[in-house]
Amino acid sequence: MRHALAPANSRRTTSFVRLRTTTCARIVFVTSAFFSLSACEQNAFVPPPPPKVEVAPPVQRAITRYLDATGNTAPIQSVDLVARVQGFLQSINYKDGAFVKKGTTLFTIEPETYKLKLDQAQAAEVGAQATVKQAEADYKRQVELVQRQAVSQSTLDTSTSTRDNATSSLTQAQVNTKIAAVNYGYTNVAAPFDGIVSNHLVSIGELVGVASPTQLATIVQLDPIYVNFNVNEADVQRVRDEARRRGISIDEIRQLPVEVGLQTETGYPHKGRLDYVSPTLNQSTGTLAVRGLIPNPDRALLPGFYVRVRVPFDKQEDALLVSDTAIGSDQAGRYVLVVNADNVVEQRKVTTGPLDGGLRVIETGLKPDDRVVTAGLLRAIPGQKVDPQVKTSEAAPAPAKEAAPAATK
Image (tube, rainbow, N blue to C red; front, side):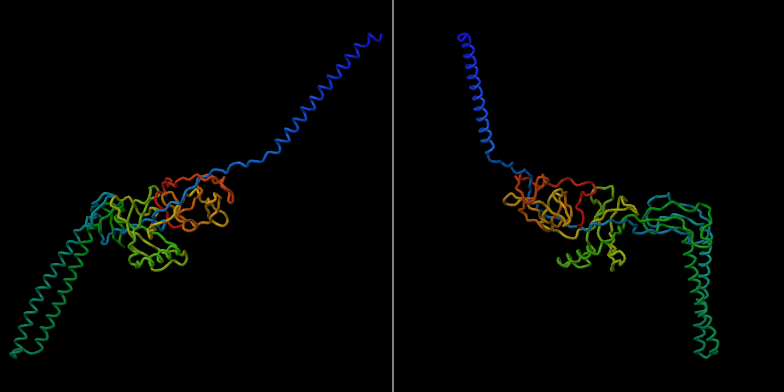
């Protein structure tokens, strides 16, 4: 029995040895893994690289400063054509809406009656002239007779009175002739200047000028044409200060060029000059009334148009400009983000000016060698480092209504 159980005990011993060996191996493996993990946790943290942003120096170039306004066109001359004499309208001698030259006959009011009155007045004038000649001759004869004492002084006095009355009658006849000639001239209604004539308001055969002058039509001069607009008080003072600095007189300011564009046009294709500046400001609006005179040979501008107006008043040779998208704003005003020599972002307060070719003029706050953040603005945080990528600022295409520089800020 003892010999029979021996192999079984031997097997138990062998299994126990194997189990201990396996357990020890596992313990060694877990211990090694623990020390390995401990070694990984002791590695230093590596921060991410600074974000990349695009930067560009301000564009430096010459600009022209403008006063920007809106205005309305108005005719330089507009006249109502009226019938100044009574009569039946005999003819209409133009086509409605036609362009006519000065002196063109537009309406004819039956002239026969007034021609007869003129002939009558002229005949009366001729008779008065004959009476004056006879009275003058008699007066001279009576003077000679009085000198020879052939007639009395009373006879000479009568002759003198007759001569003076005849002269007065001649003057009256001459005045009547002129009045008749004027009335006869009124029977032909002519264009007082070159212009466009409106539609006729009366018809042929209609009686006109009965109780008061009857309006027949309207004629409007379109070339040149006025542009009326207003300038606020601050801009007025700015222009006067600039004129004083450059030694320009007020009369020279009145000769400044004016550029005009319609709402549907690109830029300011119509050029002219200032024609009138009001001597006083409107107290209720704080603005100064200004008028420009614009040549209009092709009649592209019509009275009553709503137009954009700009007046150049100053030139700057070394203005700084940046992309309008690089400018931000907060409660303190406008600012740009600038990368300094240490590649750290700084927030720089700026004063902005007008747009010029898609770029915004910077009045104060920037230097020519500053590096302005133009792209990646969300990654540029003031006080933190960035990786600047230098680009060149380029003027973006301006919208249709901002193709030309805008006015003062």
